[in-house]
Length: 133
Image (cartoon, helix red, strand yellow):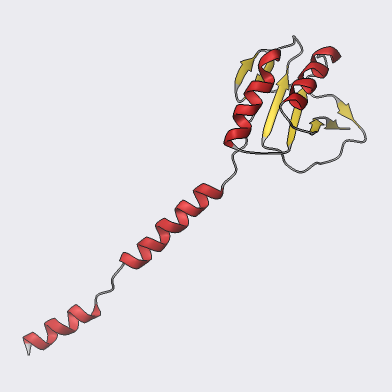
């Protein structure tokens, strides 16, 4: 009688190995397919615009401070190195759009030079961030 009860207990156990395999495969899938946003790393006072519209989200942000500093991927970069840094970021995560977050006091010439560097890196779509009125 004891032997029969032991066999019933062995048959009643549930093997968790296949379920754990599926969970780990799903975890790997979600990690690989997740897109990571490359933030500029600083906050700027964006200018207000009454006609500002919401654009699809971008993965790469470039911030320009009032004093002319350019920030990408949470670090300050030289204006002449923006294209090289963009090419590095594009190798990690391809995108077709970059958002420039320029301070409202930033000089127009610096913003244009950054836009030129973005075009040189091969990105055609550039958006300028603004606050809604």
